[in-house]
Amino acid sequence: MEPTSRIIVALDFDNRRAADEVVDRLGEDGRFYKVGLELLTAAGPGLIEDLVAKGKEVFLDLKLFKIPNSVAGAVRAAGALGVSMVTVHAMGGTGIMAAAVAAARDFPRLRILALTVVTSMTSSDLADIGVTGSTATSAATSTSTTTEEQVLRLARLAEGAGCHGVIASPQEAGALRGVLGSNALIVTPGVAFPGGSAGEHARSGTPGAAVAAGASHVVVGRSVTRAVDPVAAFRLVRADLEP
Ligand code: C5P
Image 1 (cartoon, rainbow, N blue to C red):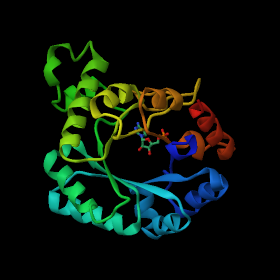
Image 2: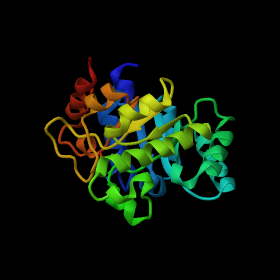
Image 3: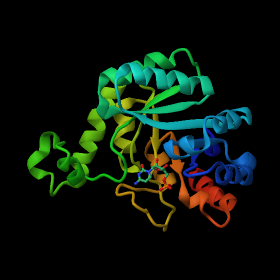
Image 4: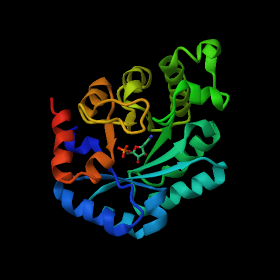
């Protein structure tokens, strides 16, 4: 896959004008956009249809986490808009993931991605919500191990439910590729520019390191969309992905 196709730009805006401006400025460079609940709610589904009509791929980050019937309905609605990726919470279990996968079968380009552990969470956050895995006693001291264990556990569950891939942090990309094999999509938000700030991502890494470790796609948000020159920032990410 060429580097440009691996970069998903997160349109985290509260209005359509701001999103359109980024898409216009990136032009041919920007091929894949992530739309989350904020922009979907503010701008409506027409924005997604327009992106698809322009030939862009859309990752609709719905993070579905409810009963199988409503998850299936939301996936069908997303498929009808022409999106390429929809997210479902792996922590919601096999039932909702399998329902999402079944609903996606009517839409050949639609891929269901399971969200494992968001990049802002550490093992102590997992312990706070009662997720301590098999190393409960070491949760306070062995942060990355426990988080990675949970990511891998959920990834296996997602694979068993038929999901096409997972969302995880750059730090788990290598272990995930080993577990999921070569075909799975591994999408990593939480990428930081080389030498740049990780923002609130607790488990961050550069785009190049994420892809070298096994990520199929990286999600970049503010470091591109809020840059003074988004095109230059996008090209920095792309350069980082070039072999
Ligand atoms: O930080 P950035 O603006 O690059 O975020 C891009 C995407 O990464 C967001 O749309 C969100 O889905 C995800 N993210 C995350 N954890 C955070 C911050 C952002 O998973 N702490």
